Image 1: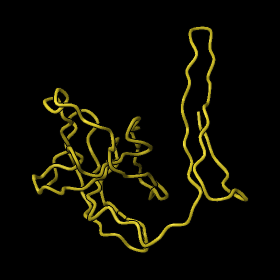
Image 2: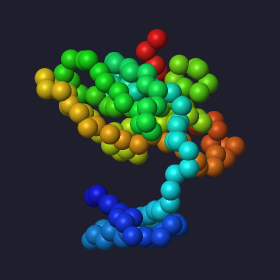
Image 3: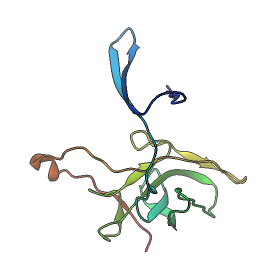
Length: 154
């Protein structure tokens, strides 16, 4: 399913709704939040590492280190054809892993549901996705099971 919002003509503020999906098995309710407003300053999550990851071994096979430019991170790879996961994130603690606790992380098309990208001979463009910070509250019990990231190519 794909959901889009249209902010045109809405006054500044936060809007909330619930999308309900009914089936013969169950009903799922998905909360949706939308904010209308203007940005102040520039958005910058720090230097990003964009990785092509082997979907079987979860090892990075290509890496691009990208600074922000006009509010966006632009990346490129020269790599042979194949199937890959596309992951991006920061390495704030310089431990050689992106996407571990407290670091920005994202995946194509989303971190919750990364999809395999099939690269072939032709150049592939327009593979955009969001990178953000996990703002959920971590309990003491969950700290031991903290997520581990993706190893950078050094």
